[in-house]
Amino acid sequence: MRSHKLLRRVRWFALTVLLVGLVGADATSAFAARPRPPVVDLGTAALLAPDGRSMSVEVIASCPERSTLVEAFVTVSQPQASGRASFPLPCDDLLRPVRVTVQSSNAPFTLGDAQGTAAVIVKRGKTQQAQDSELLLVQPNVVVALANTALLRDGGEAVLIDVTVACPLGAVGLASSDVGVGQDQMGGLAAGVASYVPTCDGQPHTVSIRVTATAGRLFQTGSALATTFAAVEAGGNEFLGVDQKTIQIVN
Image (cartoon, rainbow, N blue to C red; front, side, top):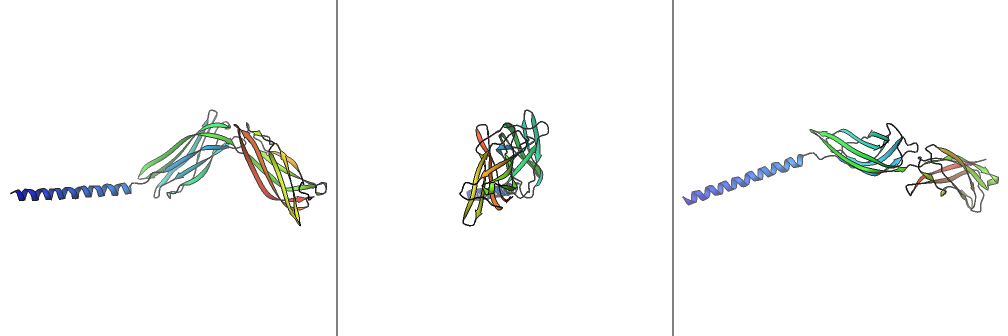
């Protein structure tokens, strides 16, 4: 009699172990089949366009495989201005850096702080959303462009080259801004550097900079390499705009 009871207990114990294993396997399969959520991470700095009509921010985001992207967007706001911009994001489960430019829908943006939010909404059976909010430090975007040609002056002692700079209102141009011109010649190098001060009022300004040869050789007509660094200060920090290109020195 006791042996029959013991046998029944062993059978019940074995059945319980089997059921627990099946339930655990089903739970593991269900967990493995559960779709991964989207990911979004918003940077903490934004670049303000010279005219203040837009700012750009860096976002890192991913959309899970076999999901459908409903929307990916960034919003930024300041007391006087706000804007929203969508950005493309393939659903391949890869983290991707994306620079998003947000246009102001009313007054211009300004230097300082802004509230930013990034979100990615996807659908795979059900809708999932990732969101990140940050206090953005709005910094000046310094846009600078060199002319394609420079004029030879004083028999090659100098060249005259135009530089166009635009920087946001509120930034201050620095005298450390400069233009350098270098020209490889048979047996040596003709080169010089000249400084200038950018004007920051949101508008592009073109200045003609005289660069004097100081390397012991004179400039001559032909190709040369020109580089400019436009330096401005905002919030106690220095920001640079850079341009470099091969130019033609002409008479």
